[in-house]
Length: 303
Image 1 (cartoon, rainbow, N blue to C red):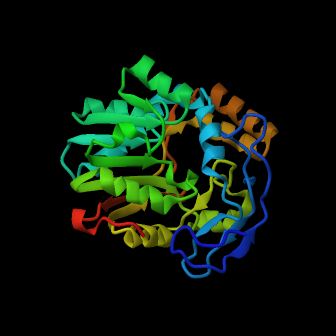
Image 2 (image 1 turned 30 degrees about the vertical axis):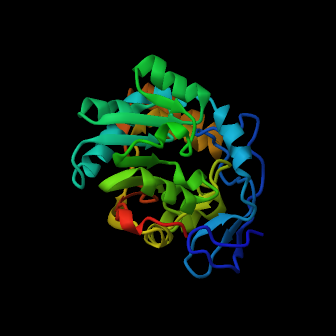
Image 3 (image 1 turned 30 degrees about the horizontal axis):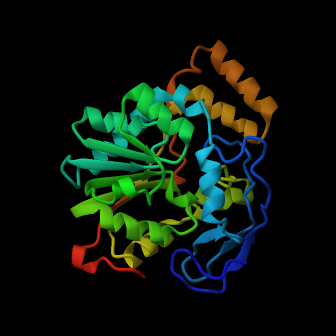
């Protein structure tokens, strides 16, 4: 069992969900429908309520897997991805003026493209060779094939850093925040978008919640994420639900993670009704956006 909570650092984690399995034939890709399966069982911290894998994967395991990850599904959902990105950027711009923006784990780059249109000076970093190449070759974006520790970031400072569906994939989220603090400009902000494992829906669905998937290592609640941020000197400024816009077809097809027959029938019915390709952003209240101010330069430290 994991020795320490990734959020508050306490020991004595307790068994929570028995969901151990494997990634499946497609590996660690962002569009998996292996709901209710994780790379290890999930344990819970009784002190802060944070949940994480019982056996945290080795960084090198994940780096290799994510470098090889490929999926066309998000490319096909470009309109919804861009609409979701615009909503996120509008919220960020309430807390910091447009300047330099870093998107960590930018995948194929739709948020970067929207930020570029709005006047941000953008840079992305993405471990997937497929996704980073798409961002460069098809969208003309400045994207580094790598991760948060890439040396290409060392001499840069950013007014905003976005981690959209990223921090829940990291075995050491506190180390990631320490790294982000060194990359932020004074008064810069970090925007985190991630599943809310403490939501009413997540609690009700338990191991069958659609965010219990092989790519997720951490399961944050609102409280445990705030604990992590404050422990590393960040000041939370905003926290709210953050629904994603996809086509009706995409959302209904995800039901295939529970029943392929039901998913196919629903997709066919909405196709016949002419609504399958409409954008839809249902708020299940199990996904959150958190914006936090970085620590003052004098307060940046290792913990």
